[in-house]
Each structure stands twice: as C-alpha cells, then as structure tokens.
Image (cartoon, rainbow, N blue to C red; front, side, top):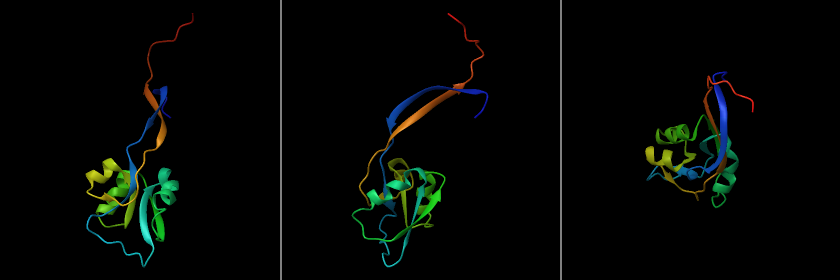
Length: 119
C-alpha cells in the first residue's frame, strides 16, 4: 500500500508441507475439546487434516503458522496447524497427514526513479 513500492510480477509456488502437530511424547486428552492454534488462511483445511481423528476441537486464530507452533511448544494450546519449517524449529511433531498448498505469490519492489517512455 506504500507509494514507494510497485508490483513487479506474480508467480505460483507450493508452500512447505503443512500439517497438525503436537508436542513430542505427550498424549492428547480426547475427553475434552482440544485447542488448535492456526493462522486463518489454512484453517479451512483442518477437517481434511483431522479426517482420521475422532476429536472435538476449538480453533485459536493467531498471526502466523510460526506463532501457532510457538504457542504449542509453550504449552498454550494442545495442537497447531503449521508448516514443516516451524514444526522443526519449535520441536513439535506432525500427527496428521501433510500437504503443500499451491499459492499465488506477488513480488513487489521499490519504485524506480526512471520515467517510463513511449515507443
């Protein structure tokens, strides 16, 4: 939204693997509703990731999948939907199948001081 940058080009690229993770060596208490931290964008995939699990859960929206993994590692939530990068960095492990997300990315750059020309 800055007047100092300009859109350069779009590209399509897969994200790192996503999945639902838990803390290592910790059993899940399935007698209560579990809290899953996730960024809003991939939250619609939770039913797919948890299709093989019989559990009730509540969603806690956070600002990023990295924040979701940090909240899990700190014990603030029971599970998180995160990327393989954040899972490895925060020492949490996937319990669900994993998958990538094919995304459209945008590249922006600083506006050039060169004035466009006419042919």
